[in-house]
Length: 360
Image (cartoon, rainbow, N blue to C red; front, top):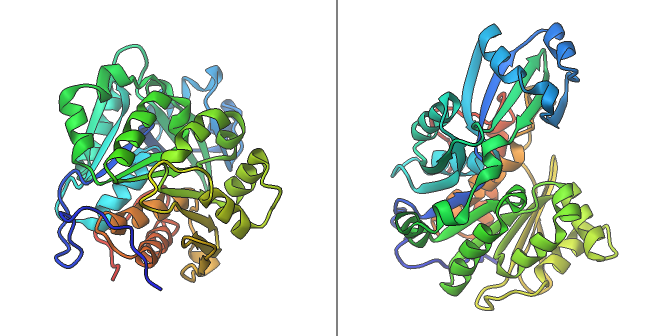
C-alpha cells in the first residue's frame, strides 16, 4: 500500500517542480571546522581520539589554535542545518527550496558560515548578534578517529521577538509547506518552535521533529511534549526511541510498539495521522502507517571497509526523506531517499557530499 501525506497543490509530483522556500528548518547553526591534528593537540585539550563533547572553558582556545596550526576545512553544520543542506542537495533545482533560521555572531566564523550556506544553495536567514561568537564544532581527526568538540555559543541565543516575529522573516515561514526542527532546538527557543508548529497545524501543513538525543527526552521532556501534539512526522533512532519510551512510561522496549504508542499520542491536526520513523543503523528503518501498521525498510548494503564516518548518517537520512516529502512523494520513496543520502554520507568524512546525487 502506497501512502502519501498530501501537501498543497503547488508542489506537483508529476512535474517535479518545487517552489523556493518550500522547506523550512530552524535550529542551531554551527560552523564545522575539521582538520587532521596530532596526538599532542588532543592531549593538550584532554580529548579522546573518538568522542563527542560540548566545549568547556579549557577548550575555548582550541578553535583559534586549530585554524592557525593545521589545514582546516569549513562546512555549514549543526543537525538541522545539515538535514536542510542535504535536502537541497538531493533536490538540486531550483536553488533555495530550503530556508534556514538560526543564530550566529557578527564575526569571521559567522561570515564563513553564511558563505558556506550560500554555496549549498540554502536560503539562510541568520539572526546576528554581538553577545556571543558564532557556534563552532571542531572535528579533530587522527587516523580513522574523529574527536568532536562543539561550542554552541551564539546558537543558544536565538530570539523569537528579535527574528522569527519580524514581518519579512515570518513571510518565509508562511511560504513553506514542510517544517523541520531537530529536538536540540528545544533547549534554545521553545516559543519559536511552538509558533511555527501551530502555524503548520492551523494551515494543514507538515511539521516534522527529531528526538535528536536521549537527553532531550530525559531533561527537556516538558518542552518536547508541549510540541508533540503538533508533530506530523517524528524522527529518531533506536537509542532515542528507547529513552523516549522509558520517559513516557510506555513500558516496552520493542521499537515497533514504541512507534505505535508515539503515533497514538494526542494530536491537534486530526486531518492527517502522525507518522513515526525510527532508524536503527545497519538494521531496517521502521515506519508507522496509520492504524496498527508498522513497516520495516532494509537499508542499502555497504561494505564495512567503505564506512568512513557515521556521525552525519541520521541528519542525512532526514535530509533525504524531506527532499521527497516536500515534492509530495509517497512515504516509501521518502524512506528510500533517506537511506540513499545516509549511504552517501557515511562514505565520507563529516556531513559532506559529492557534487550531484545519483538517486532515482
